[in-house]
Image (cartoon, rainbow over all chains, first blue to last red; front, top):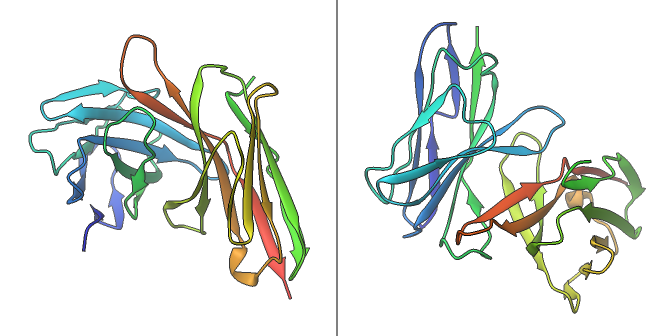
Amino acid sequence: DGGITQSPKYLFRKEGQNVTLSCEQNLNHDAMYWYRQDPGQGLRLIYYSQIVNDFQKGDIAEGYSVSREKKESFPLTVTSAQKNPTAFYLCASSSGEPTDTQYFGPGTRLTVL
Amino acid sequence: RKEVEQDPGPFNVPEGATVAFNCTYSNSASQSFFWYRQDCRKEPKLLMSVYSSGNEDGRFTAQLNRASQYISLLIRDSKLSDSATYLCVVNIITGGTSYGKLTFGQGTILTVHP
């Protein structure tokens, strides 16, 4: 089946630790995105990548890092510098055409203990 | 002012009712428009794109008014399964790039009861 997968579904982290969230897609999409969603709020863009080996900061990139070594994969690292990392993290992909919509993975719910 | 604004609701309606959601956007450079549906603790899923001429998909009708920078979603004959959060989404092509940035409203909560 074609789609976007994210792992793990739930993640618990101690303060001061870095964690990496996985995102894989087999839709042959060029563009991939990471969003964060907090309760009662809309999605906010963390990072995006329009092509392999290139990525750009979104609106709230501080405390996060990404890589795009393969077309299918766009992992997100939440570093200890992120002051309030507890949130629902959503990965998305699209064809890369400017007017195209995006399709989302099932999300990872990160809780910092 | 938020780039995309929605009435957060919640809207509580009986089965069979007709309900309408509204959304306004502030950036006149917005290029494309969508409604997404998000169930509790799940990912957003595309419900429908919104075109200037208006478009319909079964019980759902979407309208776009570019002059007023206003988008609407009408749901007829509501079902229990329509209960969800509905996200208004606007795609803005950033200047000098081919990248379309999606901006999300905070969502409108709909609960359909028996």
